[in-house]
Length: 189
Ligand SMILES: [Cu+2]
Image (cartoon, rainbow, N blue to C red; front, side, top):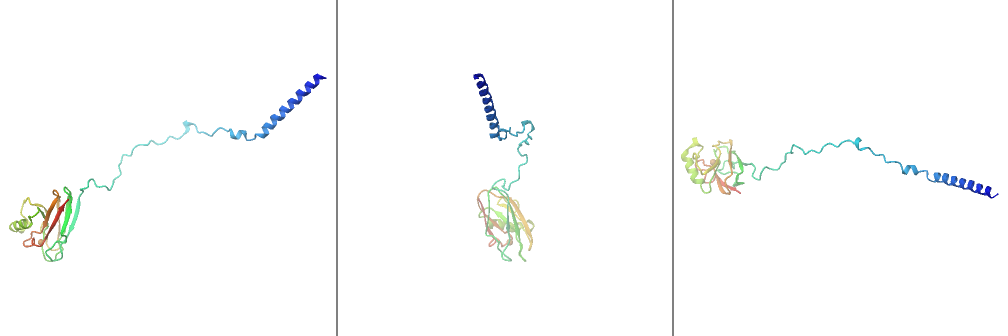
């Protein structure tokens, strides 16, 4: 009798354990979902990134190579008056300068010359002596920094030169008689 009780107890225990085991499975239906392995890509299958090489072509910039880059200055005359359209112009020392002189006068011939400070009348006097064949300018004169040729009415021309050291210079027309009123100051910074 006692032996059969032990067997019954063992059977009941086995049934209960089985019930617990089944209940455990039913109570945890998502267990496999949370433990799914991550969908990782093997390192060997990853696409290789393009090499990051430094660009060989430097893009152009609008920054001037230096603060004293070339400059172009336009100047005219005041009609048929013996006057330039500008009383003053300026540039930086060492700067490449282009002066575009448009002689819009209908009757007068002019030139434009940059000369050392205080020399415009003396240069003009020597220019008168040099004559029209020399554009009314003394030849190989160290006081002249730059000049156009003689320009007839309606003509235009250029003077190209390198701006001299800082200071105040003069520009002048050396056509005979014009230097009295036809001049201005050229300031080099
Ligand atoms: Cu003149």
